[in-house]
Length: 86
Image (cartoon, rainbow, N blue to C red; front, top):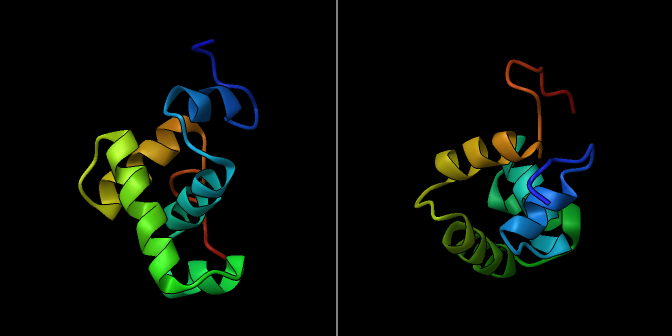
């Protein structure tokens, strides 16, 4: 299914992202650092970096900015222009 559901599951599946990778991508798209992602998901920074490498490979991107742009296109993460509120 090439359509995007309200939760982005069909696009996540299109790229074969795991639920954990999807969660990390969403936090990356919010502008979170590796440390913030690790703390938020109770992971080590090394584990987050490994997940990010897999995400970049699956999405065909080479950096965080490209991954964040893909996340927005997939319906993951913040709406462009939205304010980040902690």
